[in-house]
Length: 368
Image (cartoon, rainbow, N blue to C red; front, side, top):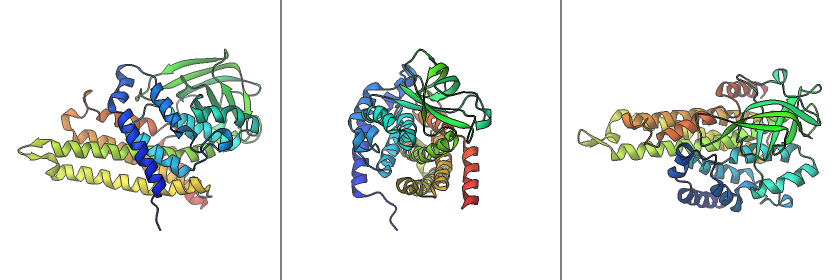
């Protein structure tokens, strides 16, 4: 059985990689830390013009109508270059929520804007430290919405947000679309380990909101959106893992100690080999996740959790060992190792921690 991508999808990969190598260098990523750039607006415009933001949006809403295998390819390349863009918030989360649960009017209003990159969306669940559940939600919804969500990825730059709020019926939660450019919303930027992906605290004071989907079915909807996004995040993590491995390998080949390349020492060989093994396992699980996502298979919860856990573990390990391979220079500001470490830590918690996804994996295995 062939799990590889098709010739057309690999051509898309080549195009994406070439574009990002030219337009999303480490200098662009570093600007987020040194210059305080919230995100790269010019790069976002170019990405939208190439159709990446509209990949899975149907043609009737000005999208390309492609599939999730193509989006997986794009996600991997964005992860490889650490692109400082709100792509995951807008495409993996907000777009998916509206595609799955939006009314015809909501789709007509938001999907064309998401496709063109005119609108940036995000998804707000967390309210405090620890795991969020329907029982500890404090944000209340209806015709107006009140509460606090923190941290919200790209909340400071997004135009609208899908908010999970408390419900008195059903599974205890409902989803709402909230326009963030209104008087009832306050934005406050939150500092994180990875400034190249901004986060914010959103305070809603009787903000106008519209119900997304069915009242009282928001928690099930959130889990479905997160399962779908988990596969795409895993591909992003796999791309980053491979880039960290390549960075470590290139440095080891070019760094000499005691008259020989450090890549010839067994300790360094073992580091690189262990990184390769974890990356390969993560990629294998990502293939499974991409298949389940693209076919909307019943196994999606299992495949998503498997890909998510493997992606988290591989990227963190690769980013850490990349620093170790660089030795005493690896943790300094001048070297680029820090960017993969920062991104690996951020991606490991953005839609739930590794422990939460391990619990989901066990539950999915039991259910199967």
